[in-house]
Amino acid sequence: MHELTNETQGARYSPTSIRATWDGTGSVKDASRALGFSRAKGYDLVRRGEFPCRVLRIGRSTRVVTASLLRVLESGEPEYSGGHTGHCTS
Image (cartoon, rainbow, N blue to C red):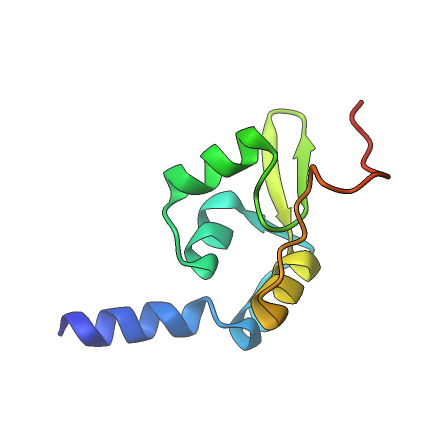
């Protein structure tokens, strides 16, 4: 039974499923699960500017850019949000 749950959850966070069900942004929690780590680890990486894909702060909300997440999942290469020279910090 436990294996079925992990298999189902893994399919939920596959690139195909993300493309079909997510809007332009997703939650840090869901993006973290798609990348294979916990929500707490995801928010820690966001705080340090090391989350592996683009992150937007909208008011008090933090959202992960879906297109960036998909590129990271498919390539295995991070797109650190704090690592781009053109990143707006205002």
